[in-house]
Amino acid sequence: MKTVALDLGDQWIGIAISDALGMFARPYGTTTPKELENFLTKLFAEQAIAKVIIGYPKTMRGTISDQTKKVENEKNRLEKIFPTITWILWDERLSSKRANTLKQAKTKSDKVKSHSIAAAFILSSYLDFSAHMPTILNHGDDETE
Image (cartoon, rainbow, N blue to C red):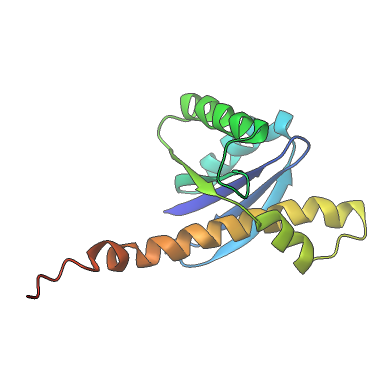
């Protein structure tokens, strides 16, 4: 099963998708908030998707902003529409800046594509963490005395 990531914005939403093994993230596309539900309906019909990672825009201090609340509300809405999918909020701090640095947006098309690149950074971060999570969780379980 594949994992999808969303980088939710007010004008554009970047989408990234993993391979079936959950090892690699790649930019998949960009849509608008108005078209997101239709985009996801089609994507879920075409691909075997287990979960969706949503970039969680906390401030650099780790506090909640107006955008954070918008993302939480959208996650709750999408969970109701697509209840068979697992929805996860994932810290996205700096992902958009990394995407813009990687691809200097010169045209409107480049700016739109940068959102899917940001989603790929979010997904890659999640996949890397998930791959090492058993190691992290079991570290320190050794009961050596």
